[in-house]
Image (cartoon, rainbow, N blue to C red):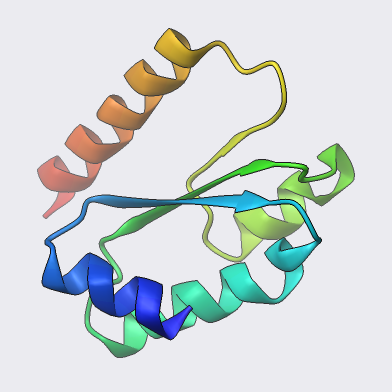
Length: 93
């Protein structure tokens, strides 16, 4: 998480996508969000996808995840949502 946050800061990223295949969303995602905060990059959005169980969606959203894309996500719709999230984040700044 710390390295991903550092790379996001160094590369002026707007969003980090996390694919959870092994239940890392309960440990790694909160650690990533905390590391972003520690590095002064709380404006970097975090999105999750992959094998994230639907019953955990609210759990990760409550910890700062901006969007979740599970199996079968319609990619053009997801891309449009991500762009809207980024624009909304920039407008709030």
